[in-house]
Image 1: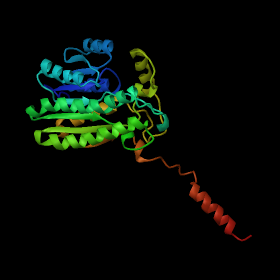
Image 2 (image 1 turned 180 degrees about the horizontal axis):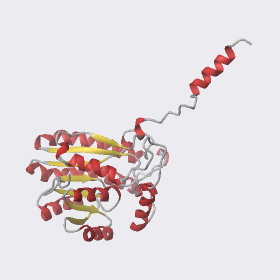
Image 3 (image 1 turned 90 degrees about the horizontal axis):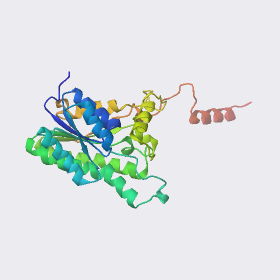
Length: 284
């Protein structure tokens, strides 16, 4: 049913590409007004023109609280309210083995983009939503925040922190009518999987397009996740359909974390040991 967000306003960080752009388009389909926050100035301005009068672009470095505050203010100034804040912007950040981790500027920026930005977005969205008596804050976490092996040490730790602060702020803001939830994507076709490459916007979008066509045997659903898959969950959490849902994290990973698929024709290592012992124990 189209138009479920008619008259409502969303602010989406990292909205110029990947999951963010898919979510911008999903909200527009439902009648929302949307403010895109992103560091990609030219693509953001282009999207503002392409997507029409219901969209505004605000140059936003989410590692800066002032920039995040300005994004929220832009939504209110342009459209009069804020109904959904999607704290989505992110990147892979500093990586490497723990003994080799660089804990200087790159580390601090990773923490600021992946965690402090979520806290800033929640803080400034809440100052608008609490007086309204309604609103939904949605944070992008990751399956890397739930299990080891899906991301670097700092990335995984910050995504765990996002899940934690989602719970604690949900408890605080619930009595004011403001809900807070998180999404934990699995393998979603975004430019994060290209690593720290100095690509322009069009090259990143080409890469995403190729990933979207790829298949994977690592998940029960044998395809790459799409930005649209996360956008659908983000819209659900923002909508009245989730009016009694807060303080939760939702895994959208094609079944990746449910467990590996069993090959019925493959004998397990334990069965092989049992077979060997039985053979050795059988008299000639």
